[in-house]
Length: 218
Image (cartoon, rainbow, N blue to C red; front, side, top):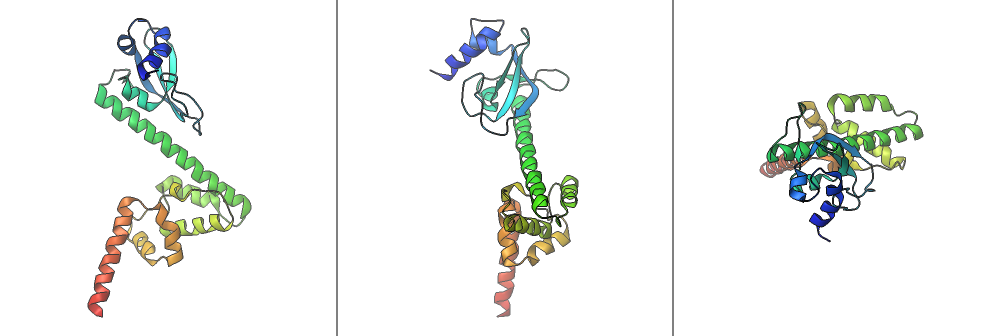
């Protein structure tokens, strides 16, 4: 069964126009309501695709019916979004809104996993000041190189389940760049999975410069 057939079976009974999928789709809007199920456990209510984690709610302008669907179906079937004032957006603006909302869902999920790991660490290591780390995270959205190396080492030492990729590093300030370059080899190994592409490129650039200087001094 094709995507269109499944979509028609699910959408037309809830639409004003029950004869044409293309016409019925014009009745539906994505208004910005979305949900994270925290696991890929649902089916898309439009195309029946399984294992949906992030649900985006679309509403019918005439019948008030609602469906929870995957973000790709909004793009695939050309469902328009509305802005905060209820105005219908064009295709480009709709894509931007949906993609922005999906990125926010992913970011919120990452933050929840990160904080859960910190709290779990505090439960097995009473001397760990979890509140200071969470406060810093809320203020800057990332950790300094020393903070990151310390917390990742403690998480590994205590066997706390975590994903290093959930932790972000900040090196915007000069002293933070200096911290990164002063890390010991084992600390750098812990921190490297957290680096962005730009941060990795910066590290390689500095290493290349140092190698060139060392060669000149030989």
